[in-house]
Image 1 (cartoon, protein in one colour):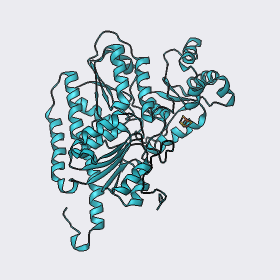
Image 2 (cartoon, protein in one colour; image 1 turned 135 degrees about the horizontal axis):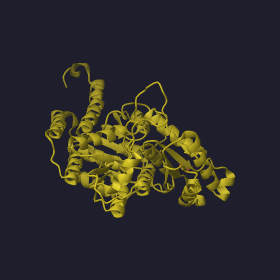
Image 3 (cartoon, helix red, strand yellow; image 1 turned 135 degrees about the vertical axis):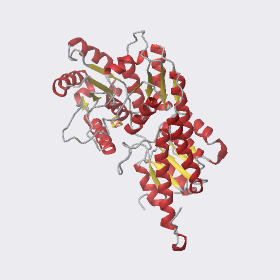
Image 4 (cartoon, protein in one colour; image 1 turned 120 degrees about the vertical axis):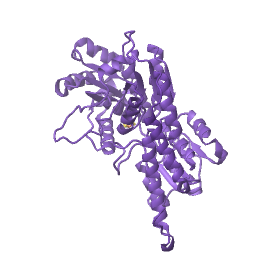
Length: 458
Ligand code: SF4
């Protein structure tokens, strides 16, 4: 029992966090920066943060993660990191030759109050940033929010700092995909293309963090949103932000700065949220939904109805990022399951309200907490056992101790592959996710069945 010290009795904790269900802002900003073509993310702080964030992303994606750091010393921590950042930009553009550097901060540079905006302006003025190259920057204090907040901050900054409004419509729809897998981003673009819509999806890590092995290292792989695309988002006909925590701020900022009307939707995980995403695309671009999309929807519906005996009434515990957890919870309710314990580590009052809305049919039987941690989730499970746990890799300790079927979902997944290649969003992604849930539940049925009930056909 790896977590044998977790007691069943739940006591209110105010200051102690155990096994958090979140990490800090800069890693989200680093991930967002990687979704621009030819971009090198840069961490303005001491180098430990950058090393940790690169290694966490490398373990999740099993790809090389490139990022630079200002490598603060004690001196910079006292007198400010301007010299470090200027020297870093000079070295980066001379040695690594990116098209753009995406600078985020750490808790150290935030606490001492470095004015990164002023430093970057100086770098442009002094010619440290070569002609035709760009530096975008954002503030990512790790003591506010979570990695999702960092993602949102970087996406908002890349939009506001690079976009220009020419006044001539490009006829495209902006999509901010949220903190999702490269496979999910590719699926969102595919759905837009099926509707005949030209989209600018940003950031876009598809092709960058799930690219092919070619035998040659490429520091800036094919893929990512281009600078030209980012420049033109102010001329788009609409923006859709997927996931309120990750994407609402960027699309609202684009709306107020460039008058591009925006819609904020849940992540399109499952039947209903995908319906809303397709409808948002349809209304933004004024197109109709083709039969190919209806066909995919019908396939998902077919499997949901075929497999009801295995799904109906099964209790589920879920932990993860708020946008993901909200969409997953709604999907589970739609397919007849019963999410009973739901936690996120990312703060935000709207989380509980939205979970209550999507689980309204169960009334007060649902335990939902934000912000919370996996220690609390484990205690909830001890008090009311579940049939399935959905969580990132850190949930495997709970799943093992409590002997619960386990589906890995979210960030990070350190002990399995597939997440970067197979989407969870859209009807196809819903089908894939459903297959994973059914696989976990039916494997358990087989494992526990006595020989006379060990069925060939389920
Ligand atoms: S919490 Fe602060 S010191 Fe720790 S990794 Fe995040 S930014 Fe760095």
